Length: 398
Image (cartoon, rainbow, N blue to C red; front, side, top):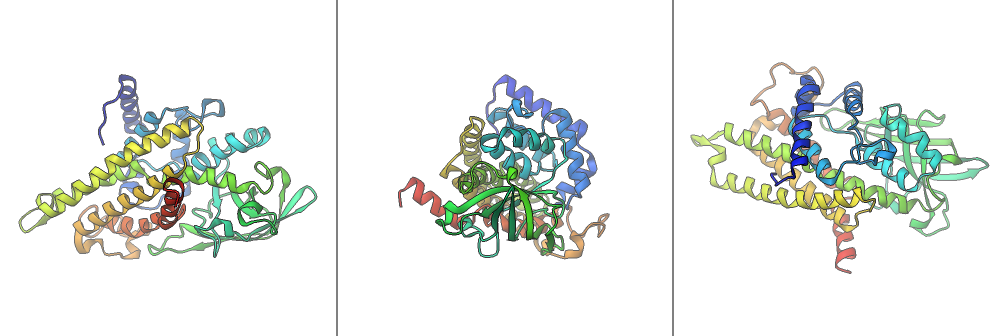
């Protein structure tokens, strides 16, 4: 997407591009471009590089150690990073928990946890979904019972992304089983090294354990780790989800994927002509590009609201809904463009398998993996069906 920028924003874009050129390791960019899983060490390496520059938490105010970027600057950084195939900044601490602690956390919690997010001491994961409580988070059954200066936590979380690497988890727990569904939930910060916690990986179609189940068996959590007020966790959870949904939309990722799709279409030949010259295929690319441009404008509005300390409402649901549809449409077009080379062979997606000479066109394996992996986009963060309900209720009064 192109837009007319102020001179200072053009200067910032140039600075970001130069930084990425100088500091982004080629092997990391290659792994991201080919949609290969990064190791924990590689992710931490990139986070440390960004933090050294002061750019890890662009969405945070400077008083909390962030960059204090404008909405335009955040958009520029996201877009340029994606186009350069830089690893994504993991959202759990920076984009999700950080804003919650800054708005609702105690001063002690802010001083304790925020610096540890920035320096990489803590790797956070999200404890929301449970068996039977995914998009309907009000149905969570993990309990936290007060016992003096501690809560005793019992239950199970699932689909916990990268939980195998995390040493902390922010959790929705039920503290008042007699209250109405949304009114009896609290927001707890739990040390993953606590006795009684078990993490069990869930192996996905590509053979990787990206998500996990987390079990809590009589886990003792200090009351000091309660964010805000007891039984008010639903308010904090909704605030966090608006930030998560904006992040899931992934305008930068979609922009980079669209550029890759165009390269594939120019390289692939159908009936003696580049696929990009096929009127039907070119029309589908144009359609998704127009939708992406419109979504990018909406994304800028959401970023501006977040920068002003506001929690976007139904607009974040609109962004999540449309953004995931666009990303999946791009993935589908790329898969169709490379044809049978996009067929999934799990061994080819694993570390060390066919790294030197992957079969088919250069981006074929990545197209297949992205198509399969990104089917999840319309489910997590609240399924798209749930988002339609939120939009209908909030904007249309239905």
